[in-house]
Image 1 (cartoon, rainbow, N blue to C red):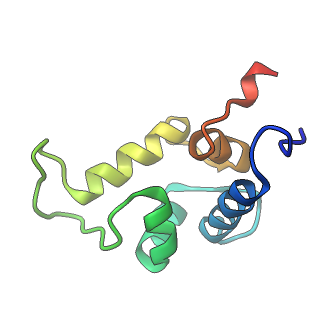
Image 2 (cartoon, rainbow, N blue to C red):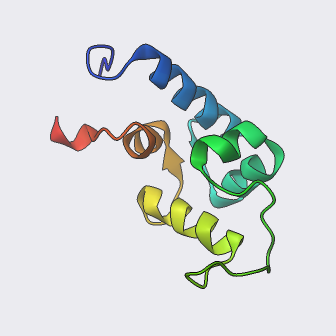
Length: 102
């Protein structure tokens, strides 16, 4: 689908670039371990995803009782329930556009 008439090209380019940094294997989808690796190693990815850059297994909890790891895990689960994530699913979440209406 051509999103050029719906989503500005700059936003598409940024989202695709972030996806490609997460998709370390370059196979068109990424897994949970790729997600965490990208957040820890690419500050720009962490900022784009609005995730803490220094994700610790354990750590201080926020006012809602969540650690940084909890926040990252919830965000990953929200993409598609925890399975491998495709570019289309990533765009749906981070561009705020649903392909399912087509």
